[in-house]
Image (cartoon, rainbow, N blue to C red; front, top):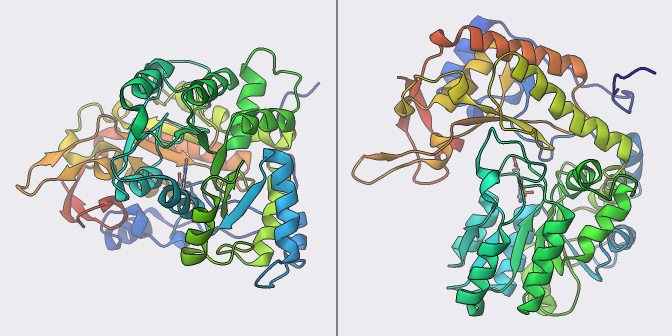
Length: 456
Ligand code: F0G
């Protein structure tokens, strides 16, 4: 019996990618002010900046796109998608948004007040930003195991229920709802167990608080439950997904991840509470509630994508891909966040650059080195992203220096991953030649997107 796990699809349409020479990449990175966000995508060979909206759609999705009903109100495409979402989530109320952060903005504006506090395993940065913008405190309460990169634990995305209980006791009046992010992106794409979600849901409900799930990567989370949680081996992923949703009172979704589409998002809610406010806010900022910032064809592609995203052959291949690259990197002596999550591999830059001072931004330096060596683009999750320059010119730094390689869905084949493993191993071998950077120009917030750097 062959053991190689193959891509469970064949390729119908291709998009060429372009190899560049080292000399060209040196010039291009220079022109980009040593900031990979400023590169043109065309000049990148393997683009692992994000898994968000970057995947390949299937022939069935492209076919569905022609079925799009572009009516302003009451389009057929809305009802088709609503039926799929109701079946998966068991929730009555569904509203499309243009992407995940819009779902957050609309729901939070309707449900939160200044001075509130919202617990979560880890808030994604747009989730945190949307809460903080409303004067709400966003608390990260992931279990302690979730903060130790090298530690192996099957569900490092679990929320710390003791700390949630303490929060409910001490500040219960200020909690509009509890959140949980599946999988936990900020914590390494780590899954949350069904047992943890169930206990969290029961705890919140005992205190009269709803549970809102951030479900961008719900299908990957469900597959991890099937593979790792006792009692779920023989349960179909679709049933696991339905059980997960049955624990929630509402969800925000970026369909650009497990929705398998290039743009889109939505809100679902179980009951009427907040619905009037959500609907009014949606109309104000997104669009009429039956299209919510999307074209009819986008709704059609998503209706198909949500079904394809829970296919077990696809999910097994998907999770194995990250695990495979992780294994190859560990064999090469590269430190990574363990175990590998669903959508990405996180390299611990400190394992390659143990002596580079944090002032030279080691994870940023490693990111640049991957591009120079092999045309690979990842994203720094370190002190450029999370550090700050204070008004007096002094700097704060992040506790970890990571490079995230996030994998677009159904896009790269095993040879791309083999190539990347070789490039990263070469970079590690040649680590003494990796140059750190200094920031020469930066905006007041979210500086990583646009900052300009020079070699340190
Ligand atoms: N929640 C989580 C857990 C996310 O990972 C993202 C996006 C969002 C919400 C916001 O969704 O982009 O559609 O507005 N994550 C992307 C990433 C950008 O690269 O991890 P959005």
